[in-house]
Each structure stands twice: as structure tokens, then as C-alpha cells.
Length: 159
Image (cartoon, rainbow, N blue to C red; front, side):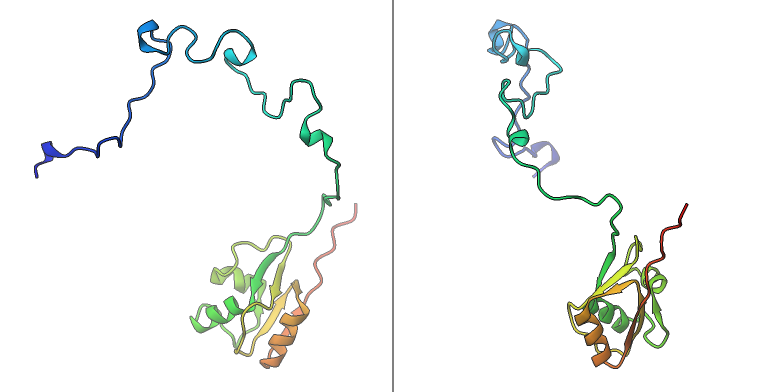
């Protein structure tokens, strides 16, 4: 086989449709847009418009409430912490702070704090200092001989 013999598989490439190029092309004149009307013009975006009928997204009832100032925590599972300890990325003998978790690369950024969950199992004796932890995570760490210190998140500054 030579370089000049290389070909794409038959049907793998299709030429692009050139619209509005005369009556012989099959897509001339109106260019496949039909005749007149809003959709035949350019710059039309009528997603969700139902011809004057109340659109579905407005007919459905609104439910719930999204708290504008809610806290968002970075979530870490115990199994991952154990994996990083085994790999030597986290020093289990020193207290494991939120900054240590970020420095090890386990957490990208702290957000409003780091919350530990109990997925996976932990065998190392850890001294964790985090913003939050689930009850089962606290139990699992204490069972392994370690401790979790849950620090209260810093209160927002009063004006």
C-alpha cells in the first residue's frame, strides 16, 4: 500500500449540502425552509413556544425552595483517605487537616469546608480535623483507633 492509495471507507464522508445555489441543486430558492413565516427568516429562536398556548414549563406547578446562601461542602469518602494514606500521599501520624487533604490532591478545593462520609473502610489511625462528618464516618474512624474533630464552620461576618 502506498500513501497515494489511501482512501476513506465508502460512505464515510459526505459532501456538505450547499443550499440556495440555484434550482438545479434541489435546495435552491427557499433553501429547504418552505415559504414565508417566522421560521423561514434568520435569527429565530422559539424553543418552548407553543403558538400562544401557555407553555408546558409555565403550566406545571413550582415546588420547593433553593436557599441562596446554602453551604456547599467538598465531599471525601473514608476509603479514598485510606487509599491516599497507603500511597504515602497523606501522613497518618500527623493530624490530617483540610489543608493537608487539598495539598495531597484528594480534594480540589475546600469550598465551604470538607465533609467526610463513611464509604469504604479505614484501617489507619487517623486524627481528622474537618468541617463536617457523617455519624457512621465518625464511628468508623474511632473503631480504627483514630478521632475526628468536627470544627464548626466560621460564622459569616456580621455587618
